[in-house]
Image (cartoon, rainbow, N blue to C red; front, top):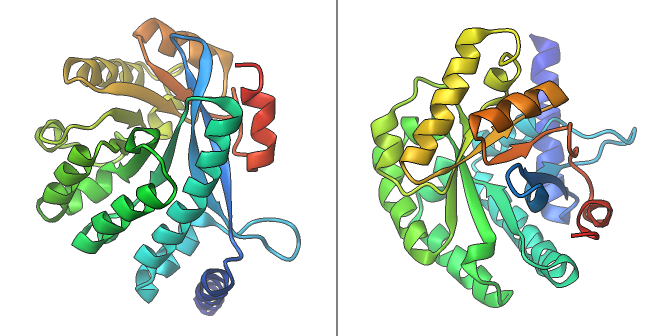
Length: 260
């Protein structure tokens, strides 16, 4: 318990320093269009460097940010960094989208939406190039509070994506009440589609559900050719995972997008 508390305090200290000095990075994991056979977007992922060259756990950093009350400040800095990179990527590689994760805590403040609008204007970017991801768990736990904000984001022209779908007790009524652009099927289900018939049926159902309600589907954590083949047969739209590309620094994206 003492060791855990020490680690928790360390993550808080590291986070505060990273925000103050802006000593954090964004890695980008490419998103593959399974039907068009091409990469056409990225997801921005937080990274804070350790002294040994590794990276602190993003989940623990986000947990520390929540508890310290600096989550929205961190999200704003991630968005700022992400849009700077997006502007450059659009110039170098042409059309693509960038997805950034947000929490319900971010959306609970009306000022966050104003910040989004001002940030897009500042960087002279169309909202159609930006997507915001919120997890299924965050959506279900905070639905009534954030629903009006999500609808305003829709009207701004920013895509909204529901992440980690299939982990929580899914509430389909809540999902279809918001105009989500993309439903991201959780890795825990994708891991089992080859060996577990029930998981395979659930994934197939979610792909059809997304299509029937005007959403695209994306499978997270795809790592094998067999998974790709099954997902393609099911009609999945997008794939994200180590099979195609790991998260990487912005500079390495040229290996992925340069030939598009």
